[in-house]
Image (cartoon, rainbow, N blue to C red; front, side, top):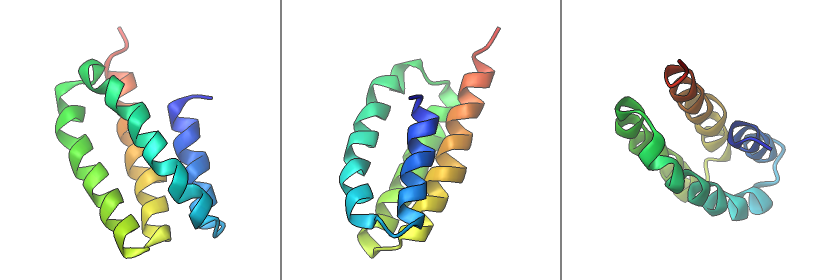
Amino acid sequence: MTLSTSVTDLALRFRLGLSTEAALELPMLMKRLLPLWPTLTPTTQQQLPRVMSAMLACQEQGDWLGLADWLEYELVQLLNQDAESQRP
C-alpha cells in the first residue's frame, strides 16, 4: 500500500467515526513520513511541518473531520506534488 493510499484510508476511518482506531494509527503514519524527509524537495520540506502541526492541533482538539481533511487533501496533495516534481 502506498503512503498516499494509507493516508487516504486513515482519513476515511476518521470520517466514518472510527476515531479511536484511526488515532492509534496516526503516530505510525508520522513515523513513515520521517525517513522520507531527506528525499523530499525543499518546497515540501518547508510545507510539511505546517501540515503536520495542523493535523496534530486537530487531534488535540478532537476535530476528527478537520484532521481527515488535512490528511486527505493537504497531506496527500503535498506528497503527490513532491513525487511529480521529482520525476524526470
